[in-house]
Picture 1 (cartoon, each protein chain N blue to C red):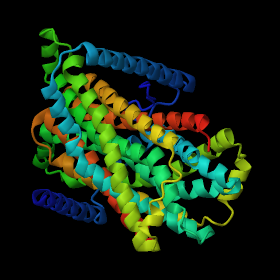
Picture 2: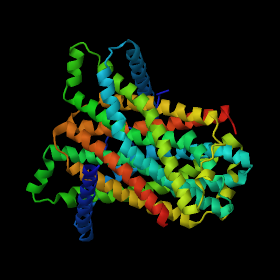
Picture 3: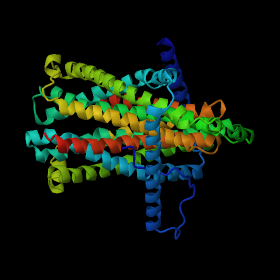
Picture 4: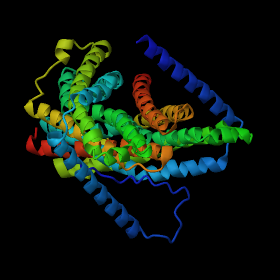
Length: 280
Length: 249
């Protein structure tokens, strides 16, 4: 599930590649092998994290700390983004709707369905991928560079147990909470936009007839998948940091790019599966 | 609340001053042209893989999300219009900006931050080389140009992705999709609106990544924190600008 696509190699050849070097097939093959390797490493990290979730040390203090770090500190950022998304979606949808149909009464129902099935989870998770993902990679990366992770290993403490597991559980719980909060915020701003710009009564707008259990289920599955993928991908980027402060920067970049790609990839897969399972 | 508002105002203010200084250097053409070309290659050409993947995926996702609505209304001819409008006006510029923010913006902050931490920027000043003209302005300009060009590319790719996913999942042939796209409901205004947005996003991403990169202090953890701050600030800025542009255009 966390075997995310990994096409962005973050090596930095500053000069353009020399003509007559590696052929196209060789380059593609190397990329594919790298992708496969990263997928395997991510899967390994995922399995080890799950193992330590059940068999590792109990540390409620660290869990609460990271939940605060991941959750409460993202609330402001996420509220801003989701609030604006609500306004933009309803405004653009309304304007386009008026180009073909004068009747706006169904826009609320459609918007809420789309929001619950996809937007709340996916846009929210993209934002969390940048904020939380970058944070995790930066923290773990600086620990690797300053050899604190090696110190942990020397004291016979598994870095996955100490560093990755609490962040993983915190992100899993808080992504779901934040996505639900984001859905609420964008519903409110969407309703207000519809009322102010299109004179649509909030009662007409807040029409939940199109939302069924399949939509809610798809949305929550997405939250769960993103919540698991973001910390694993970012922790992997953080743990494979090397080379001083430059390396930390590179690891953070890779965490953001790869966890965003993981979100997009999971979105495509889950959306397609849910469309095949519950068409219409 | 108050402290946060003041902090945001302070950041925006110092970004504005940085923009003024960059524009000054650009108008006087005291830029390092070689740096601009080098950065364009690194930021633009090397970002192509993730742009391609992102654009194809988002095109596909758009169609899958529209699918229940389309089958309910039997409006297969309108799929091209719906997907095209969403992609050209909003999704392609927005998601491309977010990915470029993650890859280029974060990388830029990390590089500048590393230079600040290792005192290379002070070294430039000692050599009487203007850090703004040599380091900052070329990067800023490259980010803006890169994002504009890459968005045009992503527009096309996302439409191709949408057309083929529509064919695969809904049985709407690419020809029907193309007809819906060109049926006259979409104009150049829609494309231009997306491209204007991408330029503005480029300005936000360039400014915030340069600003946070120059403001780094405190070794390797400081660089990590600065990168984190950059991606968060640019992402929020992109959404706020998206709203403002959508309502004015």
